[in-house]
Length: 211
Image (cartoon, one colour):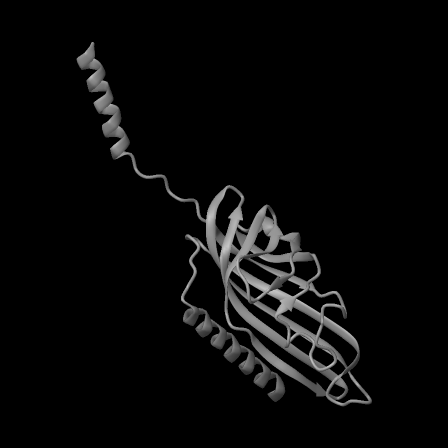
């Protein structure tokens, strides 16, 4: 009986060693979030800046998930956005569809200073980020994010080049899950992403002005 038990134990141990390791269920997919700011309370640098001078972002709590795909499809529709600062980590920025989106690393901000044309003024800011998305029964997964905001106002009739009234501002964030574990890159890596965003924005503005 003792020998039989030893043989059984050896068979179980061998089967355990031979069994393949459980595969991690990482998230694949993407989603974009859009929202606004409490006006004008969130725009703290008026009248000379709408969003370009911000480092802390007081956003409306309600956000809408659009263009959701893959495993992040449930994030479509109404979600929650949180105020954040792009100088500190980690920070939870969105809750949607049972998923939590937390930023682990911010890229350098790329501001576009206020300009005024024909009585209308506007400015912008954008930056990249890397983070972790969790929920939905999946393993925590890395994501990349591009975040941008735009502000507009009516030019002041008494102080040209500044806002007079009619301030509006909106933001959008595009998130793509990496399908693997979250990583925090070297600061230089995100700086390069920030420069790329700046180049895209500059090219877009140039094409708009030439149109």
